[in-house]
Length: 111
Ligand code: SF4
Ligand code: F3S
Image 1 (spheres, rainbow, N blue to C red):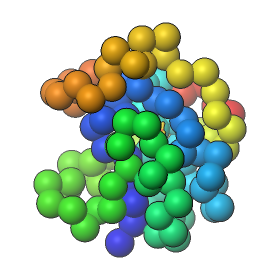
Image 2: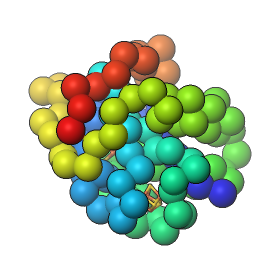
Image 3: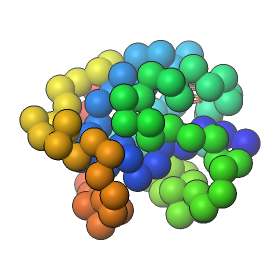
Image 4: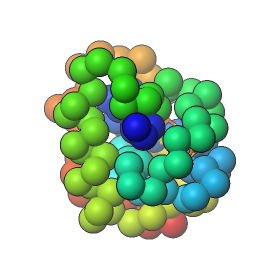
């Protein structure tokens, strides 16, 4: 198994998660982060750190699409290990449903 970043992260991108990962396996997009499933050691430390509750174990139902996104995008996005500035309207998007269409596949600025 692995932990993955899911829909709740989109447009929130709080980045508290990146500071605690012992193997630095988060990768940054324009408005979303992903975990590299091959690098994640399943420690679970990041899960409670996310204010949007976006980090879940891939053993939960219905996460196939996000497992694919974490796998595919972590191969092309830059690594991130230091928390940056969240979007100005991050709190407005927290807990919103139906954010999948908002996900940008553009890479983030890097760490
Ligand atoms: Fe990193 Fe652990 Fe979270 Fe995996 S579960 S992304 S190793 S903090
Ligand atoms: Fe996203 Fe939560 Fe990390 S909103 S950037 S998974 S702290």
